[in-house]
Image (cartoon, rainbow, N blue to C red; front, side, top):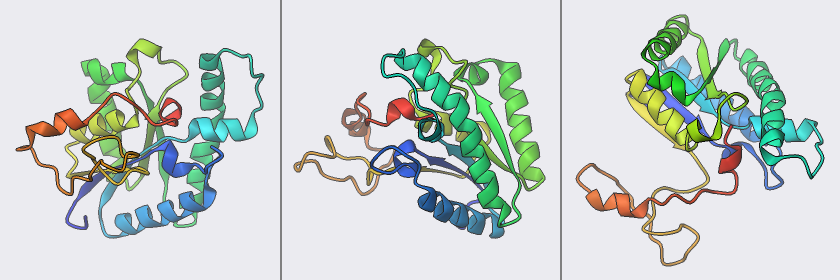
Length: 213
């Protein structure tokens, strides 16, 4: 990893939350320290972070009967402020500046938006500022949402020509079947010469993917 010069790290909700779905602040603190270590080794880092819904749920109590989409929008919009503020406070201990970038899938499809976003990220990195990216879930319609933040991180890595993309998750890697099934085996190394990999990828999501923002 230390050979990389430009790194995109994606942190999922399942990494940032406890079993009860609330934010795991201790894990966030350790994550920030590790990212800061990379930066101090002259590695430019872009962080794609979920967790807004978890932070929103922690602070905002909503009626059970409220529309699920509205609930997610409220938690995401209020939680994003708390999420980015917590990152800012943690990185301030290391004297590291951070910036927030909220995007939609349309930003990657529209050429002007794409180039503007790319230029912004590159400018931030040149100034030693850590970009923290998340989907703008409050304005994105369901049909145009990212599958999850893995997709957002992949598109971001391709956009800025990152050397390495790291997906932090609670799953050890790609399995030959559902990871929860004993018969499923971990594939230790994945390469482009393995076309059968596609058959191991399913559309099913973890229980927290709906809260990826």
